[in-house]
Image 1 (cartoon, helix red, strand yellow):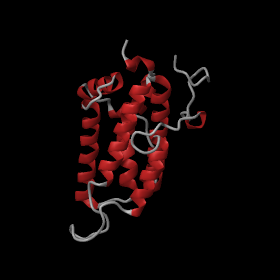
Image 2: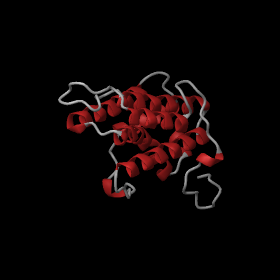
Image 3: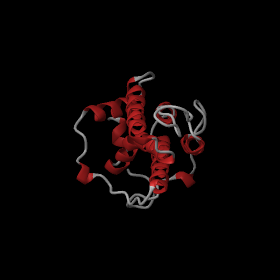
Image 4: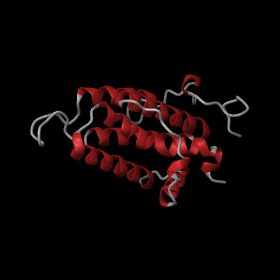
Length: 187
């Protein structure tokens, strides 16, 4: 039995998309222009690749790597987001990360949760550092803006603190949509 079997299809999608959502929250906090967006997107992809292929290679990271190598989901099957502005993107992204972290912490081993947490924190750090903010044609600006720092701090709280810290997962961080039987369990 794979660790993926611990999750419903909807829950697994949340787990798989949370790294991208963590990066999207940082990007939405302080957009960097076209070249900055490309650099930040590349940083997200590189951090995810590093996370699923690095050590320790836990069962969760193995399952995620296998899914990343497979056929991507049909965009028509993905949940639609109602976003009107970048603040909505940021808020929905942070909530998606919160839900995924709760799912992983409650349905996998401590080792899997720690590896997942580390991957998410790595995505956040690499995305924030990928492009300068506030400069002109690469001149001036700062590597990480105040807005990005604020979102990074919020994401660290959601994910579980500084790298290597324990997750602060509680009933309050449970996914907003309960399972059909109302228990919060998918089994």
